[in-house]
Length: 172
Image 1 (tube, rainbow, N blue to C red):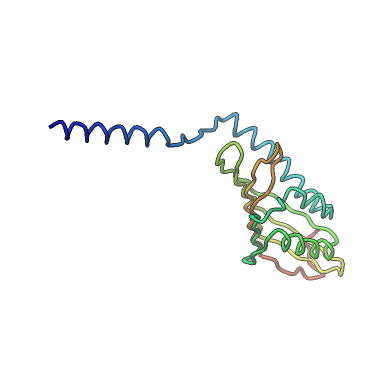
Image 2 (cartoon, one colour):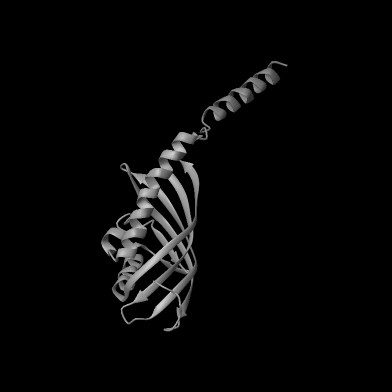
């Protein structure tokens, strides 16, 4: 009887100690989410506006130079170096581009991690005068707050890109 009681007490004590080590899930308030959304939207605007303006350095500045960085573009995987190289080539070839947002979704992980999904369309004109319709365009970016700055740690972009005939009515 004493052995059974001792075993029961040890089991309960073990369970109690194990449960004390369990991390609590951080629940974000509506105010937390609004603040995060506002801060991340500033970074998204920096990326989009500078992409449209052809400012490669400012458009890619929010992307984290880290071995953990992953970028996927239409199924092609790249690390940070490959991402920067391919974007530099693209920026060198494009004359101007314009993106139109149809929807932005936020998934809040915690106060320092958020997933943003951008859905829209676009149009690009290259220096050789070729024009392309980008429809649909979707980008999922994972942002992490590092030293009070939101950085992109993961990017997955998909686009259907079709050439526009020279006499087409599509405008820039």
